[in-house]
Image (cartoon, rainbow, N blue to C red; front, top):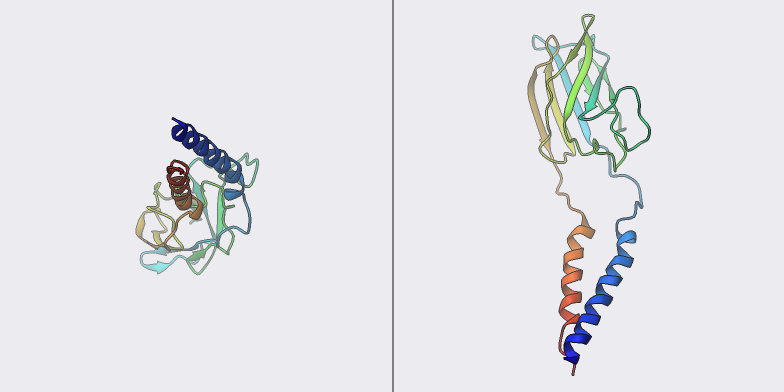
Amino acid sequence: MNILISGMASIKYVLLGLLLVLPFVFADIGPAPPAPNVVVRIVDNGAPASEVSQITYHCMGSNDTNVSGPVEPAPIGLPCIDGVCRNDGGWYYKFNPCYDFPGGYFSYEFEGKTIKTENFEFAEKYSDYEMTIEAENGSIIKKTGSSLPSGCLPALLMPAILGLGLAFGTSKRG
């Protein structure tokens, strides 16, 4: 009976310790991860649509008129030169849901009209992303992406720490 009581007390101490450490593990420390490299080519019958000077990425759920902070979804402009549009190193803040490309659409001006692509979703976190769009109607001709392996180290370590704490906390003491 004493072993069971001391084991339960050890588990409580392990869980209490984890609760005290969690705020530090998930604290916002350090700079944001590097912005993804986004390249969008806008073509008109196969040739670069050089009259497009900027496109705007609209994250799903973004509000074009009322943005209250850096983590709220908002449209972001990408400058274009000779039909090639790139994010200029800026992207969303690391806790913004748009930072990891949940999906959305692009809009731009072409021949006096506002053109909008269809909504699209990204499969995973990308470090590089390329897309080709037909200027006249906004249809997506091609999209590719490459990703770096990702993972949240604290999220991977927490189950291991908890398992070790439970294993050692409930071991028989002599």
